[in-house]
Length: 316
Image (cartoon, rainbow, N blue to C red; front, side, top):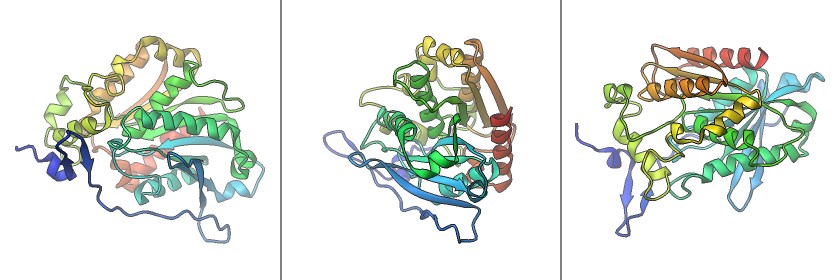
């Protein structure tokens, strides 16, 4: 099969070697913060860093505004290979609405910088900055409705990788004091992990309709520092210093990793589970035989199942 990934993703290679990604228009949703609307979840946008144009979309279950019970906080990072989409993208907006409603949690969905304009570790830096911003914010939805002792970092695809790297930085003490915020764990849905060695699932699903291998390689080329290959620590999680993973164990965090057999990255996700277990981290893994990469964004039943897992994970 010919490699048409650049045509498929509309990439322009300039004479100086730089890459420009022409992003396709996508459906976006506006936040809805009017409590008189017949909706189950309110939402609003809050600025994080105006210089970097980063912000978060906060989702508050309306039921949570009717009683004094404080809710866990999920800091969510959207997927799409580090290079496309937004916290305002309709598919991620709707997914976060469903998480907030179904898991009875406040969700903070992060708008981070995208590659290739802002290559890694920009997204990882934005994640840590957002966590710091949340812990000191005086926004009423946070101070009045969030139980700061029950915070979880969550993402799907590249967002799961962002959540993981931000978690490693927090656990290893690199980002300073986060009191009163206490992270209890990470929820990683189909983490977007790479490496120069091809896995069996990547080869078996080379021409996958959702995430073909050529697109996967190109997205890493766009996201990684110029000249870095897929064994860089920002991509190949097994290249991360082991002591950082041990710090996750030392913090007592629990990590949930879930995936699908029809995802080309499933073998790498299983390798992450094995790595965490070898370092003594408490891991909850859930892998279904069927399903593709990102299926929870298009299949309501898969989304419902995942959200039930998330709710159980946070309450156990």
